[in-house]
Length: 247
Image 1 (spheres, rainbow, N blue to C red):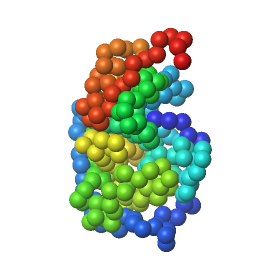
Image 2 (image 1 turned 180 degrees about the vertical axis):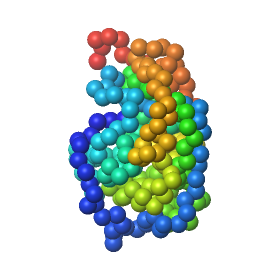
Image 3 (image 1 turned 135 degrees about the vertical axis):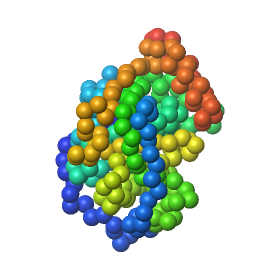
């Protein structure tokens, strides 16, 4: 979860003439995230925001982002407050690693990534206490709803489009409480965007609970688990930390 400037974007037009593909309104595939599921996600080390709550803020909508704008919005960030707060997470550690460590990172030919990419992050765990139905954005069903794998594999330059698609899907399917999709850097793992719809199951007391937040730079066993997951899921080796004071 990240902090975003607070603003609303209710006037953003959804489908645009230049869109090569867009949600056609057909029935989406539904996936149930069962009660008892652990939800994992990485956040910055020592974050200045509450990691036990949904993000209530709306990120600026950039249709064709460039420069600093590329880091100001997520793939499926809500366009307005109609669907409530939101959080990106995964039902597996592998998915959290793919989205929170490898996303938007270029893996070098050596397949070794610097330790700072992990040691500058913290791992948050929630536990879900209600069943949640979400839209499953995965092949081969995508073509039935007018989409392709671009929706979950496009780069940040196309997030203006992917946000509009997500908004259209959630608006047309008020019984669903998020999206499930393959991680861009590990298509065998699943990422989730969950939304806390007003009067929805995630607003009720006891719908979910905060478990813990651990930092691999301070927890050797967690660092080992992350390094093992990186290697098994993505064939990536985590570099050793530099000795203190060494550049």
